[in-house]
Image 1 (cartoon, one colour):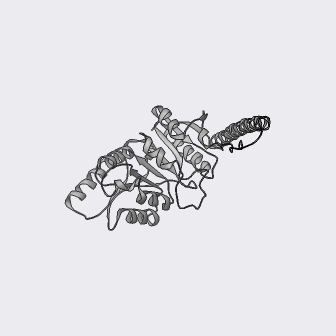
Image 2 (cartoon, rainbow, N blue to C red):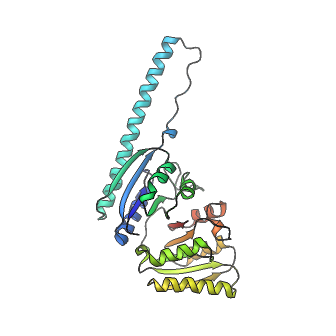
Image 3 (cartoon, rainbow, N blue to C red):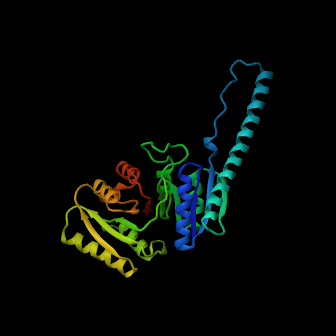
Amino acid sequence: MSGILMALVDGSAYSESVCRHAAWIWRRTGAQVKLYHVLDPRRAPAPPDLSGSIRLGARTNLLEKLSALDEQHAKLAQAQGRAILEDAQALLEAEGVKDVITRLRHDDIVATVERKEGVADMILIGKRGEAAGLDKPHLGSNFERIVRASHKPVFVANRAFSPIERVLIAYDGGASSMKAVDYVARDPLFAGLKVIVATAGQETAEVTRSLENARATLTAGGHEAETRVLKGAPEKALAELVEGGGIDLLVMGAYGHSRIRTLVIGSTTTEMIRSCKVPVVLMR
């Protein structure tokens, strides 16, 4: 990737991690960083219906005050949005990132991704957003919507940035996992990183051959790559490898019908991504 990185910040605790991962991506690829903060008009608090039996004159006066209050809330939200973008830009520039572009939009966040991802090479988001606490058992409310809507790789930042040296590709030989292997092999984002390609299930001749083909692709791309066949359910086996194998980044296909590919965008995948304390790149 050497084009444009679309990074979404919302002022949550994960926004700093998004910025630090954006700086890491920039250093490795030179991609231009575009920061987006989205003000969703649907999330604005609706004024209560206080009409009832209030006299007409009093009701008119009340509605005027509520309208003025709504206008004040909108101005405060815009000011907060600009402050979030300014803080994120300052963090990136402190990391040495050049020519950061900021965008404040009034729209649904998924609509923003759909409209703007065409010129982007990757979408960068946090696992959780401003509406989710750090220790909540669920991901950000927009996480699944964005991944479903995007046609570009989605980099999901974890809570805190750590140096990335070892990459795990969850592999099953299907189209999305083969695309993930090719992406890792070719993109400068992964240059010089050690790569493990792992699948879960029985170690058959077909599985071995498929993994060797994946390893050959990665080796041709200049990577030190190894393959593993894990025992047990994919979600548990892969999560254990991430936890105990010194994995710094997980790469997975986002759609499909096999046991590994259906992990993503489903209850099992949500649990796996939630529990893994490393960033995840999701491939379509």
